Length: 496
Image (cartoon, rainbow, N blue to C red):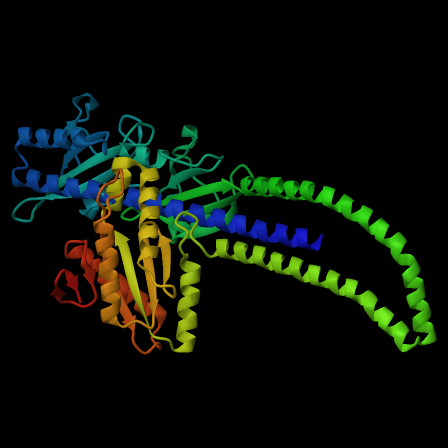
């Protein structure tokens, strides 16, 4: 019974932890995708603002630019151009019929900078989010703004990104803005509703990412992962009812119990048989103990303990099997569920152990180039296949003592103990070349950017080493991606 109870507790903690980690990673992936989409929207609006600013009074050019923005992709439901007083001078589509009207919110005009608004009701009563860029003349005079609206109740790129939810159970994802308004929810009737007290929402609106057990508005216990959306002040929450993993666990434990019952019955029968045959020798052993039996009698007593020794040996074997099972469960708790690599927890533990031992090591920070494009073109399922394929390539290029980890999204870390900077850069280039030369259907060729940092004396703060590797990784991306950066000079395709 103790073994069953311990197994239940460990399995429960593992399932809950894995569910929290999965929801955290999923929320982070969705938040990153939304942030990249909003960043692209702002970039397109910035380009249009420069075109319009060259000749703001050219009505035909304004109209053509508004139409181009609206029809270029599915990002905006409508596009408007307003002058410095907030009067709408151009819009698309023509059926919008708002030319000559004044913007309801003066904040974009007063701020005169790129903005993503909270949700609000438009002039015609639609619940929208407004993304805008200021328009400046070539002489630096403020002329007005150009903006695109995202209708929260209609089809657009934002709804398409967040509604492609691949969970098969009752899990769901929702999106909130900085005023706690729901920008997306599986229940369309709740869009625009203000969220009440919720630990996950509170944390994500502080710009944090993580996971927590929360209670939903309907009173259900949920396992929630949350992540802040770049550029916007919004937050994504991915949550799953606690009952889902617990139902799985109860089913598993019931199967275990059902499997144990026949063996337990057989054991009782054998115990009854053994008791009836052992009772007489036990009486003799009692007499030997009371009478301080002769050497021959003591040997007989010792002979009987051979069976006890065999039972003890069986119990030791059972305990070893239990420890192996617990070890497997601990491995699950310290591994990434998608790729099987180590997670952030095992990475941090290894770095702290190496720091305490004074062991020198190298860190390779890796990020798959244009991973959003893979998700956008082929879907998140193909994106997951790319991550799994890369994880396999990474394992093939590692030594037995190296530690490969996935720390979130398309970000990976490779820890190389007792490795200097030159050797680590060679490993990084081998990993980069291996991925570049291995097409991954249907995504095709995928490339990788890498940053390499080294703790030569083993005493440096691991956080600083990780930060240095991340900084070099972003230098690799800035320099054109698909490269390794270890210092600031470029040699033979590797920046070392």
